[in-house]
Amino acid sequence: MRSLIYIASFSLFVVSITSCKKYLDVNTNPNQPNRATINGLLTRVTENTALNVYRVSTNITSYYVQYLASSNTASPLDTYDDVDGSTTWTNLYDNMTDIYDLEKVAADRGAIQYRGVAKVLMAMNLQYVHSLWGDAPYSKAFNLSTLTPAYDNAQSLFQSCLQLLDEGITLLNEQNPPYPIPGESGSSRSPDLIHKGNAQAWIRTAHALKARLLNQLSKTNQYNTNVIFGELAAAYTSNDHDAFVSTWDVRNPWNQVAVNNRNLLLDGWLSEQFIDAMNGKTYGVFDPRLPLMTDTTKYGDYRGTPNGKGRSGSGVSFEETYINLTGFYSSSNSPVFIITYDELKFIEAEAAFRANNKPRAYAAYLEGINANMNKMKVAAANRDAYVNHASVSVGETNLTLDHIFKEKYKALFLNPESWNDARRYNYQYKDFTLPLNAVAGNFIRRMVYPSVETSRNGANVPPGITDVTQRFWWDL
Image (cartoon, rainbow, N blue to C red):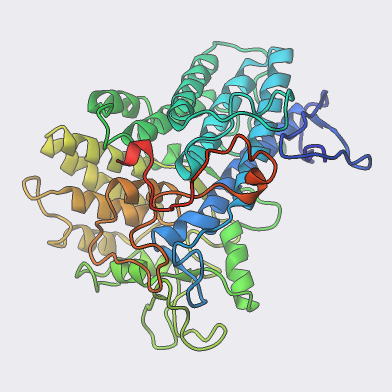
């Protein structure tokens, strides 16, 4: 089947291109269109990049960091069983193939800005492949020479992400480029669903992603706080700079989870670990963001589902807490955040702490909390009461990595980056325990390769990857 084509109704250009075959596809559908506009491709890949953030989260990471819990006892996701990630793998590679196509078309047209955006988008998607599976196809995956491409090793993939971001920054810095990406004006809509054709916004996001990636090296001898600070200085300075998508065909995907749950397709149950971190049980202070994320139970309180145990009661009985229809992250038009200003402030806090600059670390830590609460529109009085609580405003001298990671865990609710943090932090969140009925005897560190890959490209799949507690090169 040829790669899927998405032609946005509001595409502004009509130049057509032939879409490359995706290396996971093996048949051709004669009834399916195989040509798309450059703007149609841009719309498709920006939307699917945000959807891939959601897909990685809902299919994998939110259970591993215990944001979510299965409503069923001993669910494979909850218990670290060998989960087949074929759907997530395919979604990531399908989008990367379309991004590859976008860059090719942009290069043929001399559309420098489109090329720069394509580079950044490729890095956005490739970082998830690297963080979930390690070694994976990349350099040979999209050129049509083979449907069984060789694997790049994980460290090469990581360097490829950094190189893509640097190349994207260079291209986006071109002055007065031909064929600029249209922005929003009048009744027209930009085909760029993330930054609306704003090259400077894309440059800031590329630097933000570099800071995230470089901070992932905290356990290695490659970790360099000065380099991280340099990337942060060129990245976001307020919530207004966040990278997200909020334009949906029907509704925000987390809202669909809430709709499904109300229709008894049980999903979106909040973990006891996360609820206890928010409701005052774990840290001794109620977090005012919690009512903006979910509803109370029929008992008038907030109760999570223990990972691995399954639900209390039958169906949706409101005995436990779920993602709701009107939450900040889950209303019909809520954004899906890719990378944000508050995340960068916590990166700065961690890097400054590791550089023994406690004043900078503490200021960034507090700003990360305030920025996240302001974005969620927490009432000022409630925000200040939380921030001023003794467990939060601990002072520069008493600040620890525990404080920084705890607050970042809360602020990055549902973001896949939290699993990278949990592994770097060795899952040391207060009262964080293995799920009930855990198959593995330790916390999960990686995904095994999916059946869609082992069945089609098995000769190239690294052998012997069956242990989900095996650590990656950056997590030793």
